[in-house]
Every structure is written in C-alpha cells, then in structure tokens.
Length: 249
Length: 249
DNA sequence: TTCTTATTGTAACATAATGATACAATAATA
DNA sequence: TATTATTGTATCATTATGTTACAATAAGAA
Image 1 (cartoon, protein in one colour):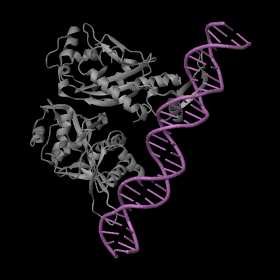
Image 2 (cartoon, chains in turn cyan, brown, blue, purple; image 1 turned 135 degrees about the horizontal axis):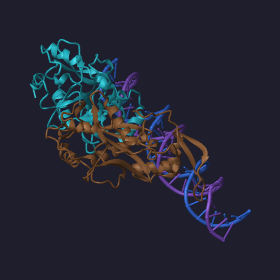
Image 3 (spheres, chains in turn red, brown, blue, cyan; image 1 turned 45 degrees about the vertical axis):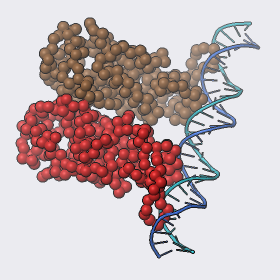
Image 4 (cartoon, chains in turn brown, purple, green, blue; image 1 turned 90 degrees about the horizontal axis):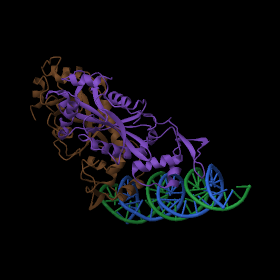
C-alpha cells in the first residue's frame, strides 16, 4: 500500500484501477468545540485536498473507501457512508494534479490516466479525534485537521464536497444515531450537547436536550464522575452500541 | 439518441462514454393504489432490467441520468435524485448482457467494454403515472410498469437496487415534500393518504393525516369538487410548488 | 321528496413531545 | 463555612399527535 501512488504515476494507463472513478472522503473529527476535517497538503505547492483514492479493479467501492479512511487515520471500524456522486463535467481540470506531479519532479504525458476526467464518489466518516493518527499519503507531505470554519483554499470542488457532507451529516444527525462516533468512548452530557450544537450550528435548550437523549435509551450512565471545576460534577455516559453499527443504514 | 446502443455495440472500446460507469434509474409511479416501477424486457430472453445508460464523456452525470429518465418516460422536469452507488465487485457478471447481445445476433468479443466491470450510480425518479409514456430503449423490446409487489425476476442486483430506492423514498417522504410528484396535478386527500400508506406500507389515521397535510401550508384547495359515489364529495387539492423544485435537496 | 348510506371535513378531547423556567444538589475554591 | 458555577431534574406551558365523534353532504332507494 505504501508505494501505491508511485506505481500510479508510472502506471500511465492506470492498470489495475477502475478508470475515471475516484473516492473523496470527508473525515470529520470534533475537538475544542469545533468540527474538523482531515486535509492533505502537497510539497512545493499551496494545494490542499481531501483524502482520496482509487478503486482496485477487483475491490468493492465501499471497501476502497474504507481502505482510504483507514490508511489516513490508522483506525478501523469507523462510521463511513456514501453521500453523493460528484460527476459534473465542469469538475474536469487536470491542472492541480499536473502541478502536484510536477512539484514532485514527474512530468506526466497528457494522456496519463490521472489527468483524464474523473467522477468522484463522496464519502463522509466520523472518527474519534483523540484516536485518529493522521498520516499523509504517498504524494502529500502532510495530513492534518483543519477547522471547518477556517479551511484553507482547496483543490477543485473539494470545498463544495465538504459543504455537502456537512449538510448530509446535519440531516442524518437526528435520524440515525451517529453523533457518538465523533466523541471519545465516555463523555458528559455537556460534551454531547456541544457536539450537536456545533454540527447543527444552533443553540439547544439544555434541559430538553438532556431529557431527549436520556429518553432514547441509548446512553449508559457510568457511575463514575468527572473532576473539574468549582461545581457539581457531571456524569459520564457511554453509548450503548447494540443498536447501530457502522454500516447500518 | 436513437441509434445510440447500436453504436455502443459496435463501439468495442466504448469510445465517447465514461468507462466502467453506468446509471440505473428506479422510476416510480403510482396507480391503482400500487407503487409501480418501469422495467425493460429483452427480446428472446426472459430478462428484465431497470432503465439505465451510460455517461457521455462530456456530459454531467446527473444530466445523463435525466437523459435516461426523459427518454424512457417522455417527460421533462421530473423529480430525480441520486441515492446510492452500487460498486461491489460481486456485481461483475457479464453473462446477462452477453445473452442479450447474443439474442440480438451480436457476438461481442470478450474484451468488449460493455462486458467489463461496471459501477452503477442509482437514481430514483417520481413521475405522474398518467403522464408518462414508457418507451423501450434500443436493445429492449418493451418498457412497462410493474407493481412493486409483483416484480419479475430481474437482472443482476436490480432487485436490491429497487429495494434500496424504496427505502430511500420512505425515509425522504416526510422530510422532503416529494410524494406529490407521484400524483396527478389535482388530487383528493384520500388519494394522498393512500399514496402515503402504500409507500410507507402502513395505515395512517385519516383525521391526523388530513390535519397534518393541511397544516403544512403546501396544499391549495381548489373550490371545485369531485363527483362520484353516494356520499359527500371530497375537495380537490393542488400542490403549491413554490417551495420545492425537482433538484432541491 | 324524503330516507338511507357511505364518505368527507373537522371539532373535541386525550396523550405525547417539546419549549421554557426554576431550583435543589454539589464540587471546587475562597 | 460561604461562595460560585454547573449539573440533573421537576414543573408548567405550548405544540404536536393519537383517537373518537359527529355534522355535512352526494348519490341512490323508497
């Protein structure tokens, strides 16, 4: 998996990969009361991009997305979901990839498969910020968290992809029980509410929120308490994962 | 557009189309209190399939889906939405298409592009049953409505595609206001309730349903009434389309 | 015409969900 | 021991939904 892109570069016809199809993954994390996404940056260029990849010609598309996710975060068993296919012709622009290749000292022929039109399948993932270990892929030189409300300039339509992923997350938050995937295993009701407020971008009433969450019957209250400031200690809760697993739709 | 598939057959390398990418469209209609889908059948074979197609190399993917939809129904301005990408490797099975080509007197070489692995982007559409004019494509010899609870045996994973489309429709029915797209322009509250009951596959309380629908403020009551049986005549309603257009997400 | 019958539109009440406010409990610190 | 901030929850208000009931018809029958 390590020399994969190296192979891709010299593999002018794209042997072994599905042609024209890519995966882009919006990997969400939550830290300091902010939503974060993982972005890659490239040597000798000011380009930032979503983690992505290609699909081996004998590989499930969803499995390819999971492979990308796992290799960028060093995590397995993560909530991951398709949300949209970005397939407008206007996306087609080989310039940035050309620039990246150039910056790495590789001059691709114009008919190189990576410079052709790509349709991209958008996935979003929810990971525990504290557990992920971001690592760049073979053509990028950094992989880091960026706050959603302070994103660098992104390659191609990656900003719209993030925007649409966030909309999907907002829509799904109440129906599916997926928010928990962004938290550590144990969390306070305040943590959970802050997460919801950040994702939905609006204030929620504390009393009603707590009542609602408890009534769902998906939180286990851990007898242990928290030690912090000069006030009553909150309980710690744990998500009872019986109901929903990563791939449940 | 007419001779398109003819071209595709003799076009062994798939020139002009995005390779390995297909579109499958679940076109829903509503008639006789049943949900219907449009299916194609093929000469000299017992194969049934969803309407589908390929993407021109200079065409938006969504536009290609709309082109497929319009050419099967002779309708424009239809509610159409992506819902899932079917990309498992296990889908790969050139047998049925081979059989279809064979039945048409064409023997494709094994490296024919249409016999390679395809990833399929699933769309679903909601159309007015009474307005659609089903017409087969160039390789099928019929295009007809089939009731969802009495489907013929379908090619490849098309049955699962329909299943997933239905789930998506059920999930979206309450949030987005899309049910109306399955009805004629004017309809009674009974029609609407029957539609909802059929899609959701459960009985709804008449009084509550009517109250809810009216409270949404999206129905215009047309003063005219209906003439039918030995009972009070229902009002006709019309959907006020200000709010939601076809591509709104 | 009047009566019967089925269905519609909606009122009325019961129950459940949510919004909003208040307050006791309590964990540090002064 | 008093102070302070925050938590957990009770309480009431408001809104939404479930449920039942009934008046208002539009035909056909008497």
